[in-house]
Image (cartoon, rainbow, N blue to C red; front, side, top):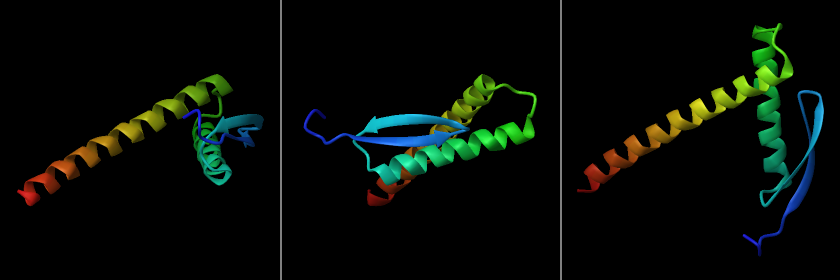
Length: 86
């Protein structure tokens, strides 16, 4: 990873500016930030009494939940594919 070129991208998430440093393209980082912002705004609109910390934690919980469900589905599909390959 030390050989990979790092990029710095300033993004806005829920009214705050963050500088993200990583090896992904700036368009990828902006997409991720936009999705986080959208999820935070969605949660906030359904729960207007929550403070930003709780909105951020619920966003993280929802994101990890979605990730685990997708990971589980990929594992199921890989098992099915391996059975079909024989």
